[in-house]
Image (cartoon, rainbow, N blue to C red; front, side):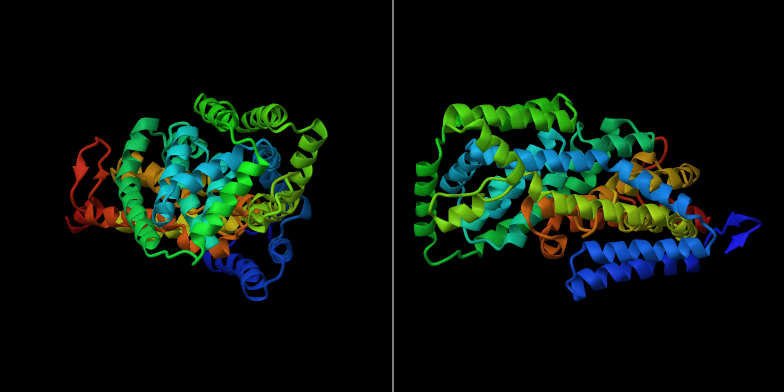
Length: 476
């Protein structure tokens, strides 16, 4: 309904209802009814639009909200397309098969999960990109895990945990730079603050993966299966170390801050050159692999299953899901639903522990509503910065907290940009892998614990707080 010709601003109850109903539709449609995810998301967007219309928003206004949201993820869409090409070409070039080959030869089955986690930590920290890590190293490790008999959700969970360590901690990561800049915090001060929550969480995560791996028995014929795969890889590809030049160059260029899309396209071209020189492939075969994906023809069913993937065609469904999800979020953002919920959470934050929880809650609400990692960090950082200043809490605690929530939780939400990417590249949905992405669950626990204990919390002048400062002031 309209007030004096202006759209209505929702109160808290109205905003919660307008938020919960569409989200429940998505959850019911995908998790209960097992419908293709695209349909429930479109229905949710339609419901949000009807609510906006009832509150007096025009279709043009809500459509603009959708278009603005789609624009914000257009780089992610281009990255998805480029990664689809990259996977197909790198398999054809022997790059991914070579990594799988040496992974099978060198990685002990008992230590596979913890090794996967640590390799992805190193790759993502070096490159600053979770997408690049999962689309390259992650694909190869997925193949190794399948060959070793690990359940795919556990494998993808360990890949995701490692990939988002670097997404969160690397000085060349977009999310790290966004969180520090919008919170007005020096980049390395921000990273130093995050070490207090991220390093302990990584240690706990590694221990859990180690324990799970040590208790993994594998199949009865595991040794025979691996020997068969190794023989098939040797017979199908030239496994020269030259095939590893594309990922090495990708790491170097990523560290030198080459933008993601040109970086991936350079990697595709280099993969194509390797495919011609070392695998004897023609340009027609390379083009087919980049568009349709690689199709395994080794004659070994398990290997062909591992390697039949990639190509632009494999990504189109994911791109459609992504566009639908961010359109839904754009409507919620435009009609004021997300802002109303975040503003209400500010009133509840009466001590440091609650303040940290409120920031995390706001980040989760933004993530659930928009599916965007960037928005889940930017809006809470802007909303809570004045509160942190007023309560004499260093802003590096705020910058850390938005990454401890908005960044690290982004792959856990089934309709987020990141979850759709993982589904498109690794072929496992967030409903399956999320419980096993251990690090993504543990980091916020440390963040909240510090808020209530005062440990690793600092005042504006950088002096440490040993107990919840807000509670102490309230007692005075």
